[in-house]
Amino acid sequence: MAKKYDTIIIGAGPGGMTAATYASRANLSVLMLDRGIYGGQMNNTAEIENYPGFSSVMGADLAEKMYASATQFGAEYAFGTVENLERQADQTWLVTTDMDQYQANSVIVATGAAYKKLGVPGEDEYAGRGVSYCAVCDGAFFRNQHVYVVGGGDSAVEEAVYLAGMAEQVTLIHRHATLSAQQILQKRAFDAKNLDFIWNTEVQEILGDGQAVTALRLHDKENKRDYEVAAAGIFIYVGLLPVSDMVAGLDVRDERGWIVTDETMATKQPGLYALGDVRQKALRQITTAVGDAAIAGQNAYAYNEAFK
Ligand code: FAD
Image (cartoon, rainbow, N blue to C red; front, side, top):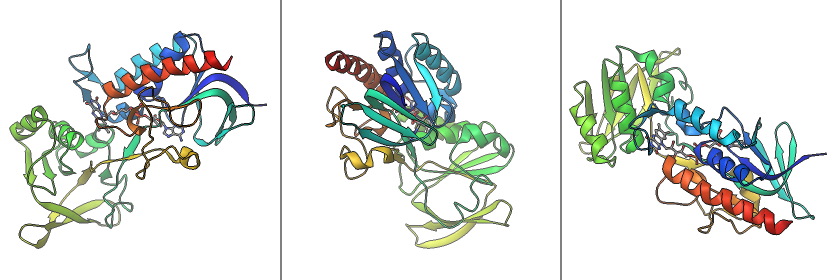
């Protein structure tokens, strides 16, 4: 028989771990399920400078601290990729992972978002061999080499500055003429001596020698010109996609896959909540994920009380 909890939280990023803190501190039995190590996208982030209480903290360190908070009141953590959620006749939820099944009165979806691919030839072929989506994970492989970053938002600019601290040269390629990143990040990028920019340009193809990336084929949109540049690596930060397949059959998503909730983080399905990056919202950050999570954890408690 499936082990039963008051609430199951899918995803142990900052949002999921904070919801676990609130729900378990309210005396609910709580299980966090994650397909990987707790921390979510924070594990792919070098320095975080906009989380209250820290002038600067490494993503992995903040993950450790949040996990300690999340488990101090008895919340459990288990590995597993959640594949399906189903509301049963007795009004509980059946949560099916690739390894097990669990039952809960309420479920909180905190599965976050994943990087978008460029969708160009060579991207899949050279993934992990010069193509990366994580500067913290792979930056050190490119010490004293020339790497390219694609994108113009916060993540692209922040990670380009981080890479400039170890690569010989970093070039940021953006398809527009201006960056959309926060001003403080833009200033750091413009101030970095070994960071330059290619504007109004798209990557058309990632080229290699069969072993690793060697060059990029670029399209200059302004001058309508295609050309190649030599490259040791390319870091891609061109946007996010919701990780919400497991609720595909529940009619709780918008047309782009983001989960729609009200301000209590409730979806239209009884006992089903969503929080953090996977939710339809304007600003996807750690602070907004943990804010959502406090509300979701508290409302999961209220729902469980009414359930009794
Ligand atoms: P996530 O952190 O995405 O966590 C979701 C978790 O769900 C993951 O652990 C995942 O493994 C798990 N999961 C997904 N699907 C399943 C499934 N089917 N079954 C089981 N588990 C599943 N924010 C800031 O505030 N400041 C910054 O400086 C900052 N820098 C960033 C830099 C980079 C490079 C990136 C990528 C992001 C950055 N962010 C920053 C954004 C921030 O990390 C996210 O907004 C935040 O992590 C969202 O938290 P979350 O809990 O909603 O989801």
